[in-house]
Image 1 (cartoon, rainbow, N blue to C red):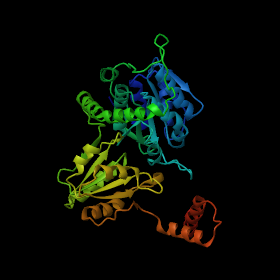
Image 2: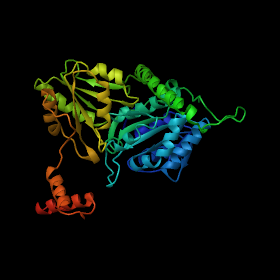
Image 3: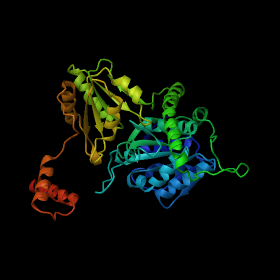
Length: 421
């Protein structure tokens, strides 16, 4: 049914259609509206036979989800930013134990300094935790991915993060097609856990493992993650067959049929990138877009095949790995190893900074022309702001916190222009 909904409301309704047994709720912007709406659905009886648990922290939320899962329940929670970091120990436990918990991550920057706006630094910080990570391009896809996520998680016994851009998607009102309960029931079978605490058949879940078997445990976890790649593709195919939408999968392509250069992007920024590419196509530029949906597991082989015919690829990053390249760029580099494809990285939209078509198109043109440098480029970097700070640091050792110093300079410029602070 078509509905005009806030993204968070749409996700809450999609999760409710999956009939979770336990929802663990702790508020942190920008995911709060999701668990609030699930609580409302529970109170109204729309989501029946579900235990809605208000917990005292994000760590508790994931711990309760783990307990619910090993007890044989379908478990769900949501978080963002610092909340994701606070539950990190429990996240690794869920991944290591192979528990099919599903969690929404409403992507938001990580402090310090404090920033509540969108980038991908939170979920990318947990890229090694043993969870599948699926990224939504828009709110319809966010809804669809949650329905697919429960099926993937339970078939593979691997937890799944569905990542959607905070505020950009979670708080945006769009038309969404919310399926009916019968259709979701037909797509998502009842939960049959691979491992479950049972007094009649006792065994330990979470036992200590020594050096003689720990490597093998990790090898099997890696193998299971690789085996999830065809399951993600198969699930997308079944979803398309039943609901008529090509949501999810490993990645999607746009105007790549004759492309000489490609832009690789994740999340809601894909819409702006596609618009910029459309404008360049009108001028004859042969450029296309690859929208990565599955960051974990990373589709190395399939992505290599998709990009092997282009001359250059520009990887868009919504995070910074301090002291190293962007996380997505490193994986693309591995996928393209040995191919004559130039690769560049454009870091954009950090902490919610606006990304415009006008700002992107010159870099896309340079990628197409092969004149873009290989080192990371920060889109719309305020060079004056950086220069002032570097001069300040050179002149004095005691400069105070960098963030506060930059804020002062920003306010000085506003006052000089007669703007309000």
